[in-house]
Image (cartoon, rainbow, N blue to C red):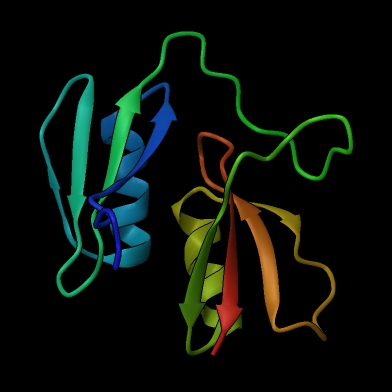
Length: 119
């Protein structure tokens, strides 16, 4: 039996509203709130929350001497089309050169790594 139920995944960042807007562009959903804490409510899926963190330092990827802390795997139907969309929204490639793999790695505008994964 589970002890708890996952409520929300929270990402620290310098600008919660801006990062929530980026992920709303990627995942859809509604951005709710303003200020230090902002939620992204995604219909039929888990919500994401964004919390202002003074002195935020983005994770390094890849870096053998530093932890990436966590990353999101986002499943997509068409990885090439999804790549164009996330880049237009402000993502930057971290490891997207190998086109033979079923995934590509990017950073969101605050520097958190995420993967586009072909289903």
